[in-house]
Image 1 (cartoon, rainbow, N blue to C red):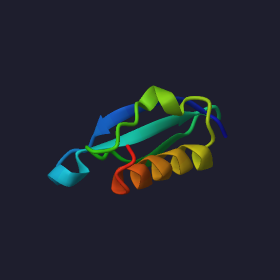
Image 2: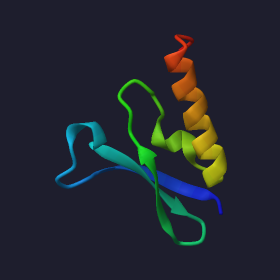
Image 3: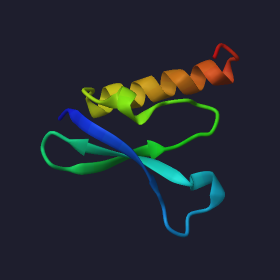
Image 4: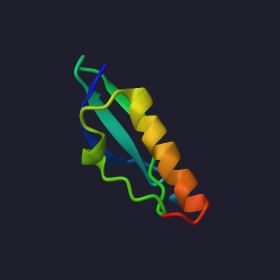
Length: 72
């Protein structure tokens, strides 16, 4: 499955730390909630287009680790 588009979606009644999620629209027609937005990890939704779910999650993890290690 390949990501065709991604949008940040506000979750109703969610606590502040879980304000928005990345919702992926897949080439199969499915919608999948990938992960929640983190204020300190700049990850534009459009940067995930064309990737698989695994690739998108890997990129997010790498960015989070870079921020945690002070490399970003």
